[in-house]
Image 1: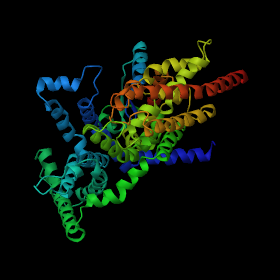
Image 2: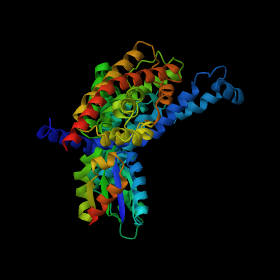
Image 3: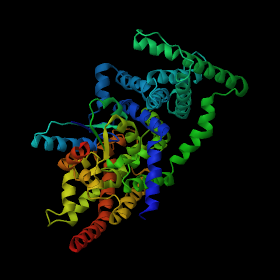
Image 4: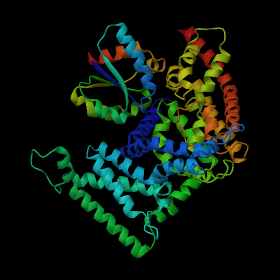
Length: 429
Length: 100
């Protein structure tokens, strides 16, 4: 396992993790995450189930007048999740331009403007919200990457207006971007005209139907979820940030799914009946409890197996990393135990999350537990996260506890093996 | 001396930063230590001496080295075990040694 294969693997994974365009996509999504989380909370607050006889939503409406409280959340939604495509068109272009050290603000604005140019217009002259959001995500990504590449080439060419010295930098910069912006917008305009004359269909519909929809259909299957869990943990086993490396592929694929769930949930559909089972919150809250590898269960297993030797190195790591683990941060366990390249830990570290993916999938798909209808920060502690992502259902907590129990039981024998191996190692030394 | 730790979100390394600061204080050293996400590194280059990369993003090493070593900034990956056990003093030693 060691040696050349491993080095090759780390190198390839590293290259993917550092690839400029993938990094730009990932950073673009990271940048809008606060807005996404606020948008999701707005929906959650609007549809929160009554706690006993107290209903927060009714109480607020009692003060503000029927329906007015929901209007607050509704407008937050419109400015965040509902315009996801537009937001990432800006943020991805910005990130990519920054990585080339060209003017990020101009690149972002050009990309956002071009996106609006392509969005289908409604009959009464409004932008069609359907394509501003996650349905337009793939167009946004392609547009941001292609136009920013073009922008970079143009800005670095002779085709710019140079200001004499002494002109303030902001002014000079806006003029520098003028000719590249003009060329790009004319090209996009021509493209849009050609599309509507010859194809009579917008680029949004084409890309959505040909690429995005089939991929999303695949994404919502159990094999896809297992593949993600497997890849993520394999990468972590080699000490690489799995979530980070596959994030640029995962976000565009899975954000639209949770958006659809959120949208239906906010229109009154129950969390049991929303369409998509596999989402990022699904993995974050039911599988990656305590971080990748469900290491919160590993820590529990360590405390169960090693009760007497208070100073055992495993226990030390457990104690050290328990507080951060509650917030799903687990680098101390991964590098301190270590899990990285530790043969005793390879099997459970991959097997546990894959198993939990399967149990959680069935729990949600069969309707035992509501599906995910909220995006929460990945640092939200388990129990709370299970409750919130299911739209405020205790069944989400039960599934987390169930998964935690299974994971702990699965980890116990491997901790025993690890302890024995450690003892032999120390004995030999 | 100014040290920056780089990881993906700057969260787990910020725990280590605290331990390193404690260690520096105990030794009466004048060091400035902070943790940033990789994308933020470029904005923090002023007077920078050492960049330490979290082992989970060690694939960034080549890229960061190319950018910073010409400017005389030393770059290395944090010792994996010291990182895992959050041994602030050891990582601080590593940084001091790097600077030479």
